[in-house]
Image (cartoon, rainbow, N blue to C red; front, top):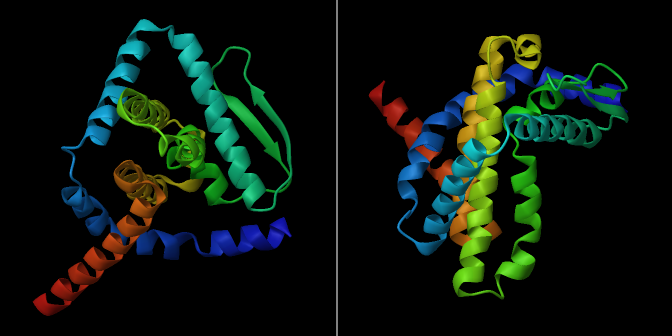
Length: 225
């Protein structure tokens, strides 16, 4: 079954990239529609600040090792979602990187997933609604600050792992990787902002906004010609 899944995903490689290029202007413009002057966003910003402070104070080796583990777990998640069997996850003894073994060659979603999918933040977002709705004041503020911490952790991981020697990016090609990573990170960050505004319903509203902005952008482009 994984062979068929890989064939379809890899067949949709460049069509997906082209679609994302079309959506990218709307993704960039969508940030103007957020009201950042709220208590939730203040908490999110405090969480980002706390991560930056703790990252400077903590040891690099521990932080780097956790980033590698999150990286390989994200590879593994997308491997499982695309019907692959994961046989082994390993962290190099010198903490220079890690590896994940799966059955088959895989696909570009598996390869690039750690660079556009914030696994720790996503897991936290899944469980957060079960308790944050009952909280007020400082406890609720702390919950959104934790989300900010995970957002900063994710961006720290991406910025440290995206470089020209990165084997995943070399494997998928610089151009394709750049399109996928830039556009999907615009979406992911916007989705987290939307979640900060109105939880999961905020993300649904955000997706509708992206479609609306894209439609308007295409109509304006067509009128120019």
